[in-house]
Image (cartoon, rainbow, N blue to C red; front, side):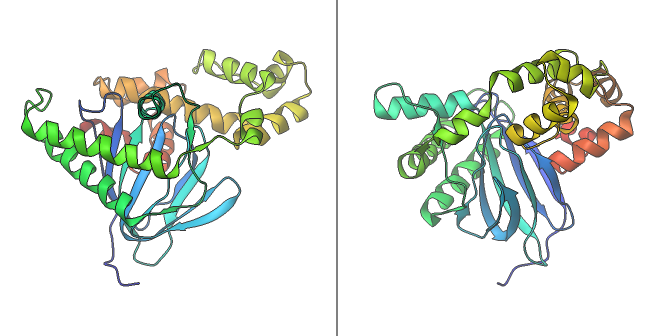
Length: 285
Protein backbone atom coordinates (compact mmCIF):
# COMPACT_ATOMS: atom_id res chain seq x y z
CA UNK A 1 0.00 0.00 0.00
CA UNK A 2 1.51 3.32 -1.08
CA UNK A 3 0.99 6.14 1.39
CA UNK A 4 2.89 9.24 2.53
CA UNK A 5 4.59 9.28 5.90
CA UNK A 6 2.08 11.01 8.13
CA UNK A 7 2.80 13.22 11.13
CA UNK A 8 0.86 13.60 14.34
CA UNK A 9 -1.51 16.54 13.97
CA UNK A 10 -5.17 16.90 14.84
CA UNK A 11 -7.82 19.57 14.78
CA UNK A 12 -11.07 19.33 16.72
CA UNK A 13 -13.87 21.65 15.70
CA UNK A 14 -17.63 22.17 15.84
CA UNK A 15 -20.40 23.29 13.52
CA UNK A 16 -23.81 24.79 14.35
CA UNK A 17 -25.29 22.54 11.68
CA UNK A 18 -24.80 19.51 13.95
CA UNK A 19 -25.28 20.79 17.51
CA UNK A 20 -23.33 19.17 20.35
CA UNK A 21 -21.21 17.15 17.92
CA UNK A 22 -17.42 17.21 17.77
CA UNK A 23 -15.51 16.85 14.52
CA UNK A 24 -11.94 15.73 13.99
CA UNK A 25 -9.58 16.21 11.07
CA UNK A 26 -6.32 14.39 11.78
CA UNK A 27 -3.39 12.27 10.77
CA UNK A 28 -1.28 10.12 13.07
CA UNK A 29 1.81 8.02 12.98
CA UNK A 30 3.43 7.88 16.42
CA UNK A 31 0.35 8.46 18.54
CA UNK A 32 -1.60 5.48 19.87
CA UNK A 33 -4.98 5.89 21.54
CA UNK A 34 -5.35 4.17 24.89
CA UNK A 35 -8.56 2.21 25.56
CA UNK A 36 -11.37 4.74 25.79
CA UNK A 37 -15.02 5.36 24.89
CA UNK A 38 -17.22 8.15 23.54
CA UNK A 39 -20.78 9.02 24.43
CA UNK A 40 -21.53 9.67 20.74
CA UNK A 41 -21.40 7.48 17.63
CA UNK A 42 -17.85 7.62 16.27
CA UNK A 43 -18.13 7.80 12.48
CA UNK A 44 -14.68 7.92 10.79
CA UNK A 45 -13.68 7.68 7.15
CA UNK A 46 -10.11 6.69 6.35
CA UNK A 47 -8.60 8.96 3.70
CA UNK A 48 -5.15 7.37 3.44
CA UNK A 49 -2.89 4.91 5.20
CA UNK A 50 -4.44 2.39 7.59
CA UNK A 51 -5.55 2.36 11.21
CA UNK A 52 -5.49 -0.64 13.54
CA UNK A 53 -7.80 -0.76 16.52
CA UNK A 54 -9.17 -3.17 19.10
CA UNK A 55 -12.92 -3.25 19.59
CA UNK A 56 -15.25 -5.74 21.26
CA UNK A 57 -12.56 -8.36 21.73
CA UNK A 58 -11.03 -8.26 18.26
CA UNK A 59 -8.31 -6.44 16.33
CA UNK A 60 -9.39 -4.68 13.16
CA UNK A 61 -7.69 -2.78 10.35
CA UNK A 62 -9.40 0.10 8.56
CA UNK A 63 -8.12 1.03 5.11
CA UNK A 64 -9.04 3.85 2.69
CA UNK A 65 -12.68 3.64 1.63
CA UNK A 66 -13.76 1.98 4.87
CA UNK A 67 -15.89 3.38 7.70
CA UNK A 68 -14.83 1.84 11.05
CA UNK A 69 -17.76 2.89 13.24
CA UNK A 70 -17.62 2.64 17.03
CA UNK A 71 -20.98 2.45 18.79
CA UNK A 72 -21.63 4.74 21.80
CA UNK A 73 -20.03 3.73 25.07
CA UNK A 74 -17.91 1.00 23.49
CA UNK A 75 -14.26 0.76 24.54
CA UNK A 76 -11.71 0.84 21.72
CA UNK A 77 -8.13 1.81 20.88
CA UNK A 78 -6.40 3.20 17.77
CA UNK A 79 -2.91 3.12 16.26
CA UNK A 80 -1.16 2.85 12.92
CA UNK A 81 -1.57 -0.38 10.99
CA UNK A 82 1.27 0.40 8.57
CA UNK A 83 4.58 2.20 8.94
CA UNK A 84 3.29 5.41 7.36
CA UNK A 85 0.36 5.87 9.75
CA UNK A 86 -3.09 7.05 8.71
CA UNK A 87 -5.17 10.12 7.87
CA UNK A 88 -8.89 10.35 8.57
CA UNK A 89 -11.91 12.48 9.23
CA UNK A 90 -14.29 11.73 12.11
CA UNK A 91 -17.80 12.80 13.06
CA UNK A 92 -18.78 12.24 16.70
CA UNK A 93 -22.54 12.24 16.20
CA UNK A 94 -24.84 12.54 19.24
CA UNK A 95 -26.96 9.48 19.96
CA UNK A 96 -30.24 11.41 19.89
CA UNK A 97 -29.46 12.80 16.42
CA UNK A 98 -28.88 9.32 14.94
CA UNK A 99 -31.85 7.87 16.81
CA UNK A 100 -34.15 10.65 15.58
CA UNK A 101 -32.90 10.37 12.00
CA UNK A 102 -33.58 6.62 12.01
CA UNK A 103 -37.14 7.25 13.23
CA UNK A 104 -37.69 9.96 10.60
CA UNK A 105 -36.53 7.60 7.86
CA UNK A 106 -38.83 4.80 9.04
CA UNK A 107 -41.76 7.07 9.82
CA UNK A 108 -42.12 5.49 13.26
CA UNK A 109 -40.08 5.00 16.47
CA UNK A 110 -37.01 2.83 16.07
CA UNK A 111 -34.60 1.01 18.34
CA UNK A 112 -31.24 2.68 18.73
CA UNK A 113 -29.19 1.84 15.61
CA UNK A 114 -26.28 -0.50 16.15
CA UNK A 115 -23.50 -0.76 13.57
CA UNK A 116 -21.26 -3.72 12.69
CA UNK A 117 -18.12 -4.42 14.67
CA UNK A 118 -16.03 -4.94 11.54
CA UNK A 119 -14.99 -1.88 9.49
CA UNK A 120 -17.70 -1.11 6.94
CA UNK A 121 -16.31 -1.52 3.42
CA UNK A 122 -18.40 0.92 1.42
CA UNK A 123 -16.38 3.37 -0.73
CA UNK A 124 -19.53 5.25 -1.79
CA UNK A 125 -20.55 5.83 1.83
CA UNK A 126 -16.99 6.76 2.78
CA UNK A 127 -16.85 9.34 -0.02
CA UNK A 128 -20.17 10.87 1.06
CA UNK A 129 -19.10 11.10 4.70
CA UNK A 130 -15.83 12.72 3.63
CA UNK A 131 -17.63 15.23 1.41
CA UNK A 132 -20.03 16.20 4.18
CA UNK A 133 -17.16 16.53 6.64
CA UNK A 134 -15.19 18.80 4.29
CA UNK A 135 -18.21 21.01 3.60
CA UNK A 136 -18.94 21.33 7.31
CA UNK A 137 -15.30 22.12 8.05
CA UNK A 138 -15.24 24.87 5.44
CA UNK A 139 -18.33 26.43 6.98
CA UNK A 140 -16.84 26.14 10.47
CA UNK A 141 -13.92 28.28 9.32
CA UNK A 142 -16.12 31.07 7.94
CA UNK A 143 -16.96 33.96 10.32
CA UNK A 144 -20.68 34.05 10.92
CA UNK A 145 -21.12 30.41 9.93
CA UNK A 146 -23.82 30.16 12.58
CA UNK A 147 -26.00 32.19 10.22
CA UNK A 148 -26.84 29.46 7.66
CA UNK A 149 -26.66 30.45 4.00
CA UNK A 150 -26.32 28.68 0.67
CA UNK A 151 -23.13 26.87 1.69
CA UNK A 152 -24.68 25.82 4.96
CA UNK A 153 -27.65 24.40 3.07
CA UNK A 154 -25.32 22.33 0.90
CA UNK A 155 -23.28 21.13 3.87
CA UNK A 156 -26.26 20.11 6.00
CA UNK A 157 -27.87 18.34 3.05
CA UNK A 158 -24.66 16.39 2.46
CA UNK A 159 -24.53 15.46 6.15
CA UNK A 160 -28.13 14.21 6.29
CA UNK A 161 -27.68 12.27 3.05
CA UNK A 162 -24.46 10.61 4.30
CA UNK A 163 -25.89 9.60 7.68
CA UNK A 164 -29.16 8.46 6.11
CA UNK A 165 -27.20 6.23 3.73
CA UNK A 166 -25.21 4.86 6.66
CA UNK A 167 -28.40 3.96 8.53
CA UNK A 168 -30.21 2.57 5.48
CA UNK A 169 -27.36 0.30 4.42
CA UNK A 170 -25.68 -0.72 7.63
CA UNK A 171 -27.78 -0.12 10.77
CA UNK A 172 -28.72 -3.18 12.77
CA UNK A 173 -30.60 -3.81 16.00
CA UNK A 174 -28.38 -3.92 19.06
CA UNK A 175 -27.63 -7.60 19.81
CA UNK A 176 -29.62 -8.99 22.72
CA UNK A 177 -26.44 -10.06 24.51
CA UNK A 178 -25.10 -6.52 24.32
CA UNK A 179 -28.36 -5.09 25.60
CA UNK A 180 -28.33 -7.40 28.61
CA UNK A 181 -24.70 -6.66 29.42
CA UNK A 182 -24.79 -2.93 28.75
CA UNK A 183 -26.12 -1.63 32.04
CA UNK A 184 -27.38 -4.10 34.66
CA UNK A 185 -28.63 -2.51 37.90
CA UNK A 186 -25.46 -3.09 39.89
CA UNK A 187 -23.20 -1.60 37.23
CA UNK A 188 -25.59 1.34 36.86
CA UNK A 189 -25.38 1.94 40.61
CA UNK A 190 -21.58 1.80 40.52
CA UNK A 191 -21.46 4.21 37.58
CA UNK A 192 -23.73 6.60 39.46
CA UNK A 193 -21.44 6.50 42.48
CA UNK A 194 -18.32 7.02 40.39
CA UNK A 195 -19.90 9.98 38.60
CA UNK A 196 -21.53 11.69 41.56
CA UNK A 197 -18.48 13.79 42.53
CA UNK A 198 -15.49 13.28 40.26
CA UNK A 199 -13.12 15.09 42.62
CA UNK A 200 -14.03 12.92 45.61
CA UNK A 201 -11.79 9.88 46.30
CA UNK A 202 -13.61 6.56 46.07
CA UNK A 203 -12.19 3.20 47.14
CA UNK A 204 -13.06 -0.09 45.49
CA UNK A 205 -14.32 -1.39 48.84
CA UNK A 206 -16.71 1.56 49.14
CA UNK A 207 -17.87 1.11 45.55
CA UNK A 208 -18.50 -2.58 46.13
CA UNK A 209 -20.51 -1.88 49.27
CA UNK A 210 -22.94 0.22 47.21
CA UNK A 211 -24.04 -2.93 45.37
CA UNK A 212 -23.52 -5.50 48.10
CA UNK A 213 -20.55 -7.30 46.53
CA UNK A 214 -16.99 -8.03 47.52
CA UNK A 215 -14.30 -5.79 46.07
CA UNK A 216 -13.15 -8.66 43.85
CA UNK A 217 -16.60 -9.41 42.41
CA UNK A 218 -17.49 -5.73 41.98
CA UNK A 219 -14.29 -5.04 40.02
CA UNK A 220 -14.78 -8.13 37.85
CA UNK A 221 -18.44 -7.33 37.12
CA UNK A 222 -17.67 -3.73 36.25
CA UNK A 223 -14.76 -4.55 33.95
CA UNK A 224 -16.65 -7.38 32.23
CA UNK A 225 -19.62 -5.10 31.53
CA UNK A 226 -17.91 -1.85 30.57
CA UNK A 227 -14.60 -3.08 29.19
CA UNK A 228 -12.63 -0.97 31.70
CA UNK A 229 -11.81 -1.27 35.39
CA UNK A 230 -13.62 1.27 37.60
CA UNK A 231 -10.71 3.70 37.93
CA UNK A 232 -10.10 3.81 34.17
CA UNK A 233 -13.80 4.22 33.43
CA UNK A 234 -13.97 7.08 35.94
CA UNK A 235 -11.03 8.82 34.26
CA UNK A 236 -12.83 8.54 30.91
CA UNK A 237 -15.91 10.11 32.46
CA UNK A 238 -13.75 12.91 33.88
CA UNK A 239 -12.36 13.59 30.42
CA UNK A 240 -15.81 13.59 28.81
CA UNK A 241 -17.13 16.06 31.39
CA UNK A 242 -14.07 18.26 31.04
CA UNK A 243 -14.92 19.09 27.43
CA UNK A 244 -17.75 21.49 28.31
CA UNK A 245 -15.67 23.72 30.62
CA UNK A 246 -12.74 23.67 28.19
CA UNK A 247 -15.06 24.70 25.38
CA UNK A 248 -16.36 27.52 27.56
CA UNK A 249 -12.83 28.85 28.01
CA UNK A 250 -12.16 27.72 31.59
CA UNK A 251 -8.38 27.54 32.17
CA UNK A 252 -6.90 24.06 31.84
CA UNK A 253 -5.53 24.13 35.39
CA UNK A 254 -9.00 24.85 36.79
CA UNK A 255 -10.62 22.15 34.67
CA UNK A 256 -8.00 19.61 35.78
CA UNK A 257 -8.66 20.35 39.46
CA UNK A 258 -12.44 20.35 39.13
CA UNK A 259 -12.33 17.07 37.19
CA UNK A 260 -10.53 15.25 39.98
CA UNK A 261 -7.06 14.89 38.42
CA UNK A 262 -4.11 15.25 40.78
CA UNK A 263 -2.53 18.04 38.72
CA UNK A 264 -2.45 19.54 35.23
CA UNK A 265 0.22 17.16 33.93
CA UNK A 266 -1.86 14.18 35.05
CA UNK A 267 -4.89 15.63 33.26
CA UNK A 268 -2.88 16.46 30.14
CA UNK A 269 -1.38 12.98 29.92
CA UNK A 270 -4.79 11.28 30.07
CA UNK A 271 -6.41 13.83 27.76
CA UNK A 272 -3.79 13.40 25.07
CA UNK A 273 -4.04 9.60 25.21
CA UNK A 274 -7.78 9.86 24.52
CA UNK A 275 -8.02 12.81 22.11
CA UNK A 276 -4.60 12.83 20.47
CA UNK A 277 -3.85 16.44 21.44
CA UNK A 278 -3.16 18.26 24.75
CA UNK A 279 -6.18 19.97 26.33
CA UNK A 280 -4.81 23.46 25.66
CA UNK A 281 -4.53 22.79 21.93
CA UNK A 282 -7.97 21.16 21.88
CA UNK A 283 -9.38 24.23 23.61
CA UNK A 284 -7.84 26.72 21.17
CA UNK A 285 -8.98 24.72 18.15
